Length: 308
Image 1 (cartoon, rainbow, N blue to C red):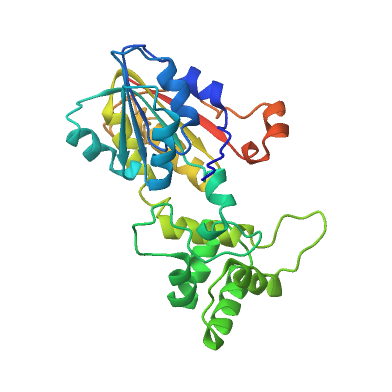
Image 2 (cartoon, rainbow, N blue to C red; image 1 turned 60 degrees about the horizontal axis):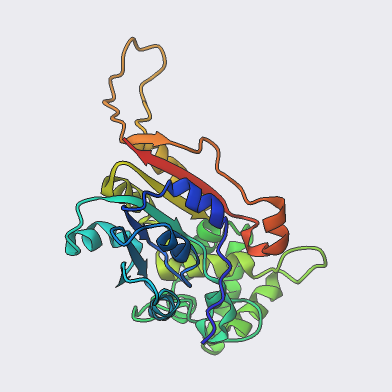
């Protein structure tokens, strides 16, 4: 099994964590262990890395790639459950948390995972293959209005309504089973045009987000992660599209104690309490060199928060 994933903004993430050699760190999206390996290389035998991933295959690969390190705990779970994960491990606080919210190159490239609109594979898109909801179920059972809403909200696709209508038309004749079938349906609404992005990109993103519930819990996940930090601990989050980045930005601002009082009041009435400070007022972006070497880094943004 090949699990290739070039870690995005690797050095920036490591610097952002400000690693204490004896500290406890969490990689909430372990994937192929690219970021994890750099973290564990920088901590001592007294330090600890907790690697979390909802993809069991990723956990297996990470264990193999980090087999030389003894101070790693592996957790097959969703980073959204970080509060419960740390409670179960009896760890009251950690020194740093990294969340890389991108889909791994392995997941995109493996046709049978159904994430990619290139080639043909089963409509799956589950990051955690033990869950029941799949892309096939979303495409074939959701109401037309729900499909249109998801494609518009999560894919920011302005042709969401005609795409949803076309999907419903086709599934009345035959169940839509493969990524290739779905791409062909989308292309009836949005033909490929030279120089433009793939017409199915936004719809596939939207369905993947729905299947894996990537956006709705994110704000609370950020807040729970900040609460899990020790004083001076840092949370680094890599996002890859505007919906993720917006949720992270809003959570960081709220955690920093953003005052919502009307301007002109002599003192704060809203009771805003600061949990720390935003290190990156504007998100950090990949270098030109990295974007040239790794096209999947082009949409990446890194935001960093430090606990009070």
